[in-house]
Image (cartoon, rainbow, N blue to C red):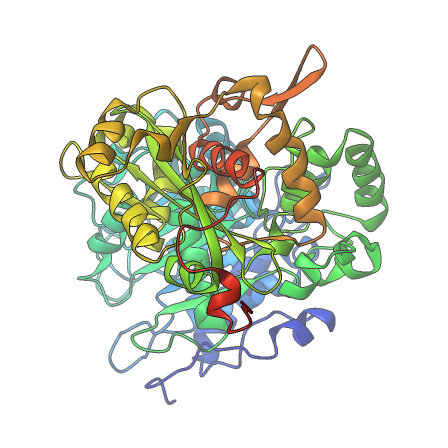
Length: 575
């Protein structure tokens, strides 16, 4: 068997899904061990189904392929496992928790090392309890397993009492099933670990550190195994879930090859189906692609009825349903009272629209700033008017102090993602945010793009004293900036920008920060006016969107740049 240089790339994964096959490549497995693991898996009984059928009767072929890969990938000569991790993205109602319990028991049954620890971690106590109940139920349903394993209820632990016939050594291996908590893994060295619903864990503080600790504890064991089983997130992927999913996709698509030990098993539609304007994924004929347990734990008829119920409750519930039952990745939080521009935001993205590109393409630019304290974001948005098309071009950036991550733990994973992407700067000293924002403004001034005869910089009156001082210190007269009224006074921006987005007359850089802000925004009807406020958004941030509104209010004034005439720069000015 050739275990060196194994590739986990699966370029034909979409075609495999259409054919009802498991989306993994052919692997050089130890067929004896792989078949032995599958035989054990098939004998396990499902405790919460009437008649307690075996997994051989109730489980799909796809989960057997996972079992084969997990337990047939150890080189018998070196003892090293070449499939060290499995990342399984699978929709709800496809027996995730039951399969996690079964995989944990198979790991114990296939284990040959004494005194090892294994762990199954659920995102909540409820999920962990259910997983433990499934594992304990499987043991109770089989006479052999009842003799081999001791179930310690109060510790949520399963102890292997088996004694090796050749050496006489007792296995004394343990499987612990617990809810997510940094204390669970601190100092532990698990031989195998199964994470159930990583997307929910990613919303918790220190999630990436916990996953890192699990991996770190496995480094010394060549036979170690990490299995991640998760549904898509109900919100835009963030934190450790986003990182693991992107890595898995990179491996699957052949973009990541060096040092790979992760086998991706991703049940999701191709991106063109997920992102299509006509929402192609709504067609039930496509659904079997991502439902490997179809006809067992889930049926199309039941899903269709459930989907129609979600549709009746509005777009927010429809999108949430699709994320959980079809693994549709959410790009925007499309809640019922969303800002209308959210519907058209994704289609107006141009990833090549950097700040420098904004300068190159614009005939005039204005700036909006939304200030914040130490526990808030400071945001800047620039809107330029295209020299050729007169479309509006948009770029934004935000700054945050470390206090934001401590005081707003629920959004910390998303903020770290934006920092890694270059859309957010974590400040090292007070005033860094203001200084760097004014640096950008000076770039626009040096390029002759800021207007002189009308305000160039629109500010929220709250929390901007330091910014005003910095602007004045750098020679900006007070007539160059203006306090933009908030609340109902932003009505023109709130209602007009969605029209520009619908016609693609506003193009943006497609940053994750702005996508998040747009998705967080909620509209409120105050009297006869629709408003967007930070209070309505709650803990979710919209600072960069508010800065965008401030800039838009200036651009509505049809400003003229202070630099050379656009006609002169094009060589068509006639005197």
